[in-house]
Length: 501
Image (cartoon, rainbow, N blue to C red):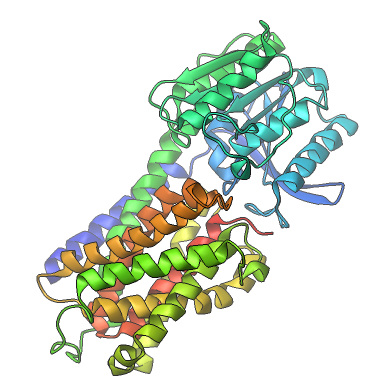
């Protein structure tokens, strides 16, 4: 077993090294500034191709729960066209402080454009506005008020209650007319609601200056890294600005490096957790199975989750936490955790006490693994927490800790030979809860759309986090240590992906 862990650790280190080699070289000139405009302090990266005189400009907006870092492939592709690309972090995202709301993001995006125009840094007749998802809608809205040369809207967020989109799911409800010289791009694997609303933008304009394009095989996120979408954007910019089209696409080298490093971190994490948390003292060996029967456990999670979603329709207790729709998730987990803890108070009291050493080891391991966000920050996504997010971190850990502790107690200890079954049960319980959250969006129409948009990312996180919690529980025999470790990881993850308000 030790040899197997050593091999995993060595493979992880090698993958991290390969990831650094792939991700760090940047064959583009990238400078970052803070632009102050109408009360907005937008950290903005300017991307250019070295040795090439800029023949025009692009202002590129990211989507909700994203940031300028994830737009790097699009920015570099447009820079290959001979354009200077301005990519801001919108309020509450990346390195730009909050508060965030869709309306303020739009206001700050327009303020940045007007500031660049007033300084003479860009020329309206040689400038294209572009954006993805929420950023695509913002680019369209701004272009309808500030005349520019053209628009590229990539999977723009719907602004009309059509094609299955209900009013409470809209970030903006007063759609403007699509400006001339507009390209609207979507992926064929996106929801019909997204594709239909995007197609309507061009159909309603009904002239030859605009174009709708569907990229085969692309999803809402993968379209940001699609060579076909990038080529279409380059050609549109060349057509609008009367430039010779480029034949060069940016490399995916940095993306492959980010993925390689992430896999390497995952391989290292297991041996690291086992080394840090130590060996199981055997305190739980006599305890077998879940505290209650599996059918009852599933029923309790389903009923409790449904009741809490109904309650949150009228009252969100943690609204002041200052996270856009993250306050809803935090409130849900707090209420569910407290409810489970009160229902099974006797079982929790009978659980073996957690030693100070186990709790400290779990805390150290959780905090150290948060350093993995530095890897994403370096290569793929601005994930390192800002001071404003760190200030919320201790409170968020306390809020989600009751849920993780109740879950650990109810699951019982990790049994040899049944680890996969326990992990599957834990993930099933979380899937039931997430289903209730989605029911709030689809049935109660509560407007918490990020619950749906972030489902894939939450699924991947839950698999990784629960696997780590099982290792901590196995090595320490402590439900409290495993719960604390999981709460630390969840707090860090939520503070990365939910915008500040």
